[in-house]
Image 1 (cartoon, rainbow, N blue to C red):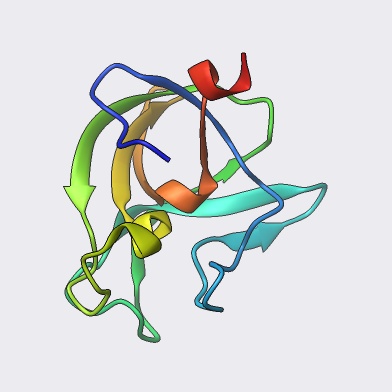
Image 2: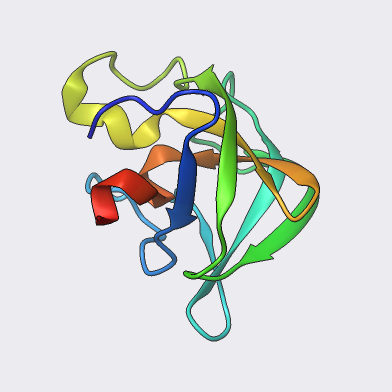
Length: 111
């Protein structure tokens, strides 16, 4: 997966709540939706208190705009193998939330 950039349009992979290594990257919600938060604590992840702020329920057909690349949790190795842990800030339904790239699908990749 290539790094997303500001202004890219994305949809959400709502069927993936765990990364390939087994760490939680999103919380499951009913009807194949996921629950994401306003902020992911990059200093603490993975821990018991990784997600904070208001939560948002997102479905697979919801579109969002990438606002910025936030970074990768400092406990996660900086190699291409772990790109699914890169965190992006996205604008969805007039709200900003942070989400792991493992849950983002570029609209360009779908075409």
